[in-house]
Length: 135
Length: 96
Image (tube, rainbow over all chains, first blue to last red; front, side, top):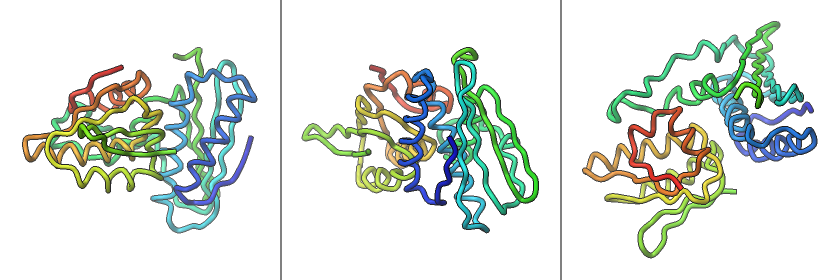
């Protein structure tokens, strides 16, 4: 599956629906849904929020792999930003020192079984996998 | 789908998917609350970092007045998100 989505949070509902259909059509284990939905949303939101110099749609691709799924998000005409290098979050910090910032990418890095970043020709592509085998 | 409502007993129910598209709606609702507040998550299917941010901001505001949020009826998937993000150390959480 590959589909382009406008750079707007109201697209999240469509993405969730398309992901649900892809899982069903490819008999992918539903236990992976929460992690996959979360990683897609966090990466999509990050692209919308921080790659503001473009109005091009974001491409999402899904591929069935052994006991799981591979997902890629590609952003066009943007500066390099490697989410795999996101700063760690101190989850043991007391409440007074906690802030919501950075938590999204931190969760993606924790939940994905593998994650890979490519940047070429002002095209930014992040690919992650989740599989039951790696659970 | 997302909804947030308060019962006659004062318990706040969050329902459906609390994602980036719905975080502002949830924040506006929770900003109106005062004192100790119980959030019933029995019908919460999904939460992302945007939703976690709403809970964190509200909890910090209420804790400044010696109150805070108590999260009840948390399902396994949501509990996993709380654990990954360290929220299990910040909130009183009661699982389903």
